[in-house]
Image 1 (spheres, rainbow, N blue to C red):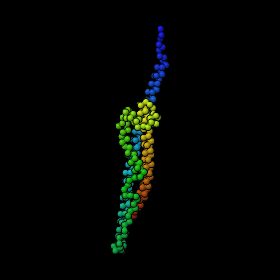
Image 2 (image 1 turned 90 degrees about the vertical axis):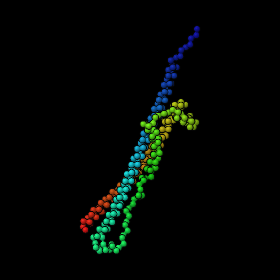
Image 3 (image 1 turned 135 degrees about the horizontal axis):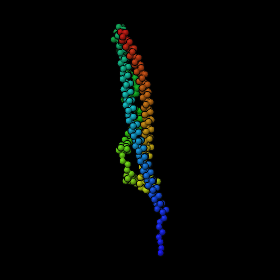
Image 4 (image 1 turned 180 degrees about the horizontal axis):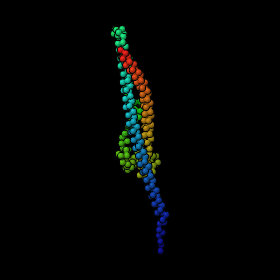
Length: 236
């Protein structure tokens, strides 16, 4: 009488071990894909904050420019007042000035254009980052829903044969790897845009520092001239 030998426990354990390893690989790949997606979302958020800070800095530059123009106008008006006071102080001076042609009024010093737009580097960086606003909306943790299903699988058809060979054969695992690679590429581009924003902000801050120094000197000079004019008026 013949007997069939039962399968040894080693074969079942090996199969269970293989299934466990496959599940663990999928779990870790899914966690990595989710982690890179969260990191990408934080990157878009940082970029959005950088654009908002840039816009606020440009508005500050506009306010500084308007203030400088007002100070220039006040200085010009003060010079006109000083000429009138000098004319009043002397009868002969008044008569001379009456028959003499009115001296041309010197225009206040103009520093740059009358409108303020911010430096070119910052403006280009802001435009580049604003183009990613839709991606920020799509990737925001409160707005997005992770999905690695049919859409990710269909992307495999767009890959070259060399690219397909570099990914795992398992469709789900391949989708995770493709998602990770896509996120890493987007993060690289995002970091490049953040760097451009930072450099643009640095240039804008330096230019506004120069504007503040120039404005401070003008205000100090205007203050001295106002005091001198006030003293002359009291002496009339």
